[in-house]
Image 1 (cartoon, rainbow, N blue to C red):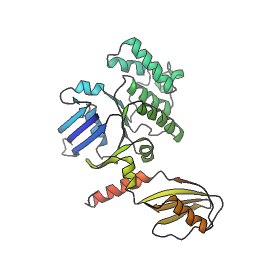
Image 2: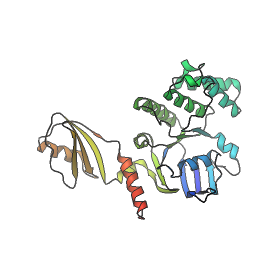
Image 3: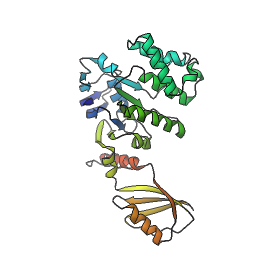
Image 4: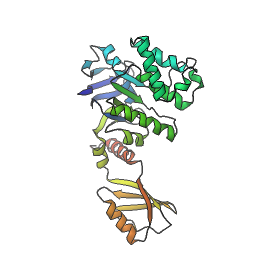
Length: 309
């Protein structure tokens, strides 16, 4: 079943700026879907239309068979939104911030209280329940935003830069929670500038630039289209790397750390055989988290040159 179906969605602002130019997009129920693009690509406009904050110029939007034009309130009821900006009352308690949100959706007090407690416990905020929001750290405020977005049990969760400004440890703990909710059946749509975040979490991705979808495909298919992959090699001891060729190029970062750009299709066995023959002892090898970024730059570069992406 389709969780989201967008057809020929257009938005032209008063100054004549076309933010969306006939966007077609489908998200299946249960997907963890990434919507990626640079600033000004149209992501925020698209989310604004879904949530009723922006009026579309034309096109159709359906969320689980509910038409945005026909039943806007029903569409909104099925969406949970965690915005990039912290937009709650910092003088209100954490409990009330979440509990009051449930009331906006007509959830009775007893059920709202049960859900509020469960979410605050799950997101490790229970000991802060009675404290005002202003006392929370940046990471706690992010988790409180997520609790508020989930309290009415939406079918689709929209995350707009959910981990912006968080350190690596907090980001990864949030990833674990989101993965569990997705595995339980929640459809999640993610926008992020942390491209490794999309690669780690999402099974499908759409790349948007200047109001146009450049590519929409499973994550594994997109990554498979890369002409090269970059790996980090940790060496057991300093060594002279083999000469570069068309398949592998090396960059020494320090005596024990080397980046290796590998042509798509070359196997790990081939790489290790070459290193062994050259007398290089590799202690560990892992992909560098930039594969999606390379693809994005490639797609945007092609479009800017007027080529077919």
